[in-house]
Image (cartoon, rainbow, N blue to C red; front, top):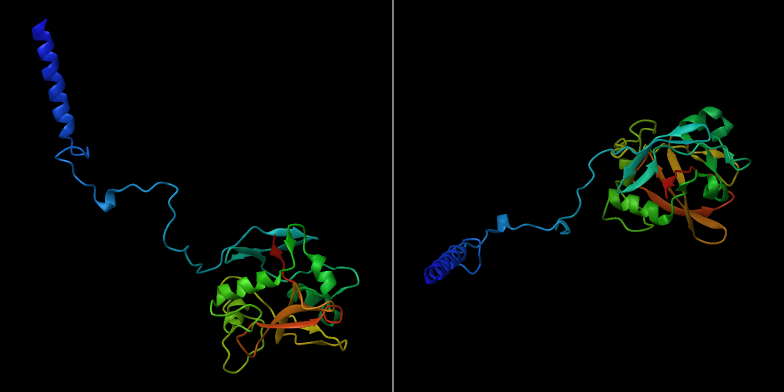
Length: 241
């Protein structure tokens, strides 16, 4: 009996010695500190670097609205329709020079009140914040509601704009495909087709005025302005809710 007890004690001591000599055991004299490359990171850990920068066109799902198909693109995390809206809202939307072919190319022109409700369900007229985020994504040095150089060139379609000396053509780098659809102005005349494109935002400057932005062929800017809600007709570009 005594012999069995001594054997058990020796076996226990041997196992303890083996365990304490385990190089993975912090209490062992033979413990090996893991290198930084072998340390596991939990799945909840966040990367220290910022997200990757978009370098090209990211297409979203196409949208059918009032019998027309609109391609979409994702720019800086927001989904935009890739062309101007061409929904015939009764009484408050016009084709440039009242010619249907211009609507097919450039979309329709709307007064502000109609523009506010013209986009399909799940989409909206872009707010000032939407437009500012897009512009600053294109040129981070720009600030809210201020003219932004180079942003226009990146949004413009590669063709369809009047040529201007010393001004590079549009690059359409992210697929926004801005075209110079002109506007219907307060004097009742259409103007600027081929030269400038004008777009509404939902941001109001006053009871009678709202903010719009425009691009022209003779510079590389996106420019802001506030104009009369009911006396000007501009293009509409919808953004996803």
